[in-house]
Amino acid sequence: MNRFIYIVNRKLNYLRYSVIFLFPVFLFGCKTYQVPQNQTNNYTSQNRKSYIENYKDLAIREMKRCGIPASITLAQAMLESDNGNSTLARKANNHFGIKCHNGWNGEKIYHDDDRRGECFRKYNTVYESYHDHSDFIANGSRYQFLFDHDKSDYKAWAKGLQRAGYATSNTYAGLLIKIIEDNQLYLFDYGKDIDYSDNTYVDTQKVQLGDIDNFKINVNKHQVLTKNRIEYIIVKKGDTFKTLTDEFQKISWELPKYNEIPEDAVLAEGQIIYLQPKRNKAEYGSDFHEVKEGETMYSISQLYGIKLNSLYEKNLMEKGTEPKAGQKIWLRKLKTEFDKAKETPIITDFDSE
Image (cartoon, rainbow, N blue to C red; front, top):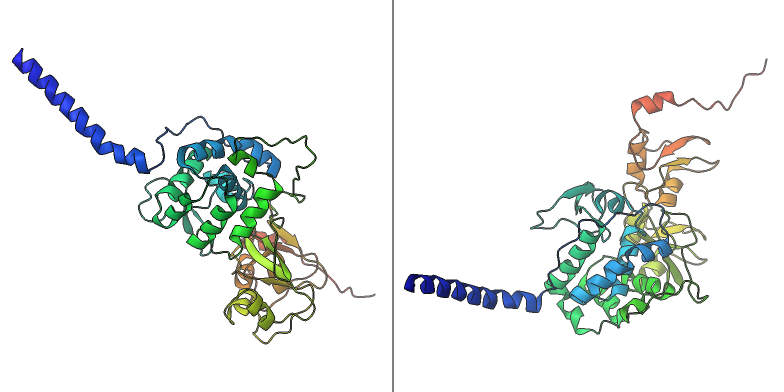
């Protein structure tokens, strides 16, 4: 009997110390919920309205678990994943563009972003992506000050995320706020729902899927747009690299380098000028381009936000050569020698008999 009482007391003491040890984890971190394994991955053919309908419950659940406003979570997901249509979202359920970083032991996928073949986190379900995003913010030391803001103050959260360096864009906060306000996502922060029958709801995505040019915000005299997840502006009369550098607080060499033209180049009205480096391939959905009369490899690279050298490499063309009207230009994958051989030469001159 004494031995039985001794064993019971030891087990009780073990449980008591276990509870004391684990208590701080629950106090300072997010609540611990099991990630559901039956969450379906519905990412095809989504616009903003369908994305909100599909994933609002996940954002609300994460708000209750970790305290991040549902409006912020949804806006980030919509911006980072192109409403669920990006390559990372479709192939890896990664809706927030979170890279592997040190210590990531989960599945991985390699994808061209700022550099070729960067490592991104891969998830089994969309909810795992939302769950990990919340933990990423809640457990990151540089984001802790955000939790001093009220959950209803989405503007403070958006500005805080930009200040903490979540994204390199200097208009990131404005983009999030624009998405939240255009789509009334702030209603979710108050426990309300969006009434789609109400005429005040505005679905600002009026373009085909895969085109993220709809994200816009006014900055000074120019409107900042995004193409291929790169910010750009349209040149107005009188613009120079000097005036644009001052307006967007860039270093003198940045804009010429990002746009692959000399620093003393004269800018033309209507010209595209990127505010960030171009990428190695076009966005999802833009696989090919049929050359029109007068187009050059450079104009095509600017049209799709692709680095000029990468465009030449993808099409097995010598640098400095130009395409012919009607030629098929590859924008995402590498053209093979077999594909090149299949192309029919375009004959422009005919011998008259």
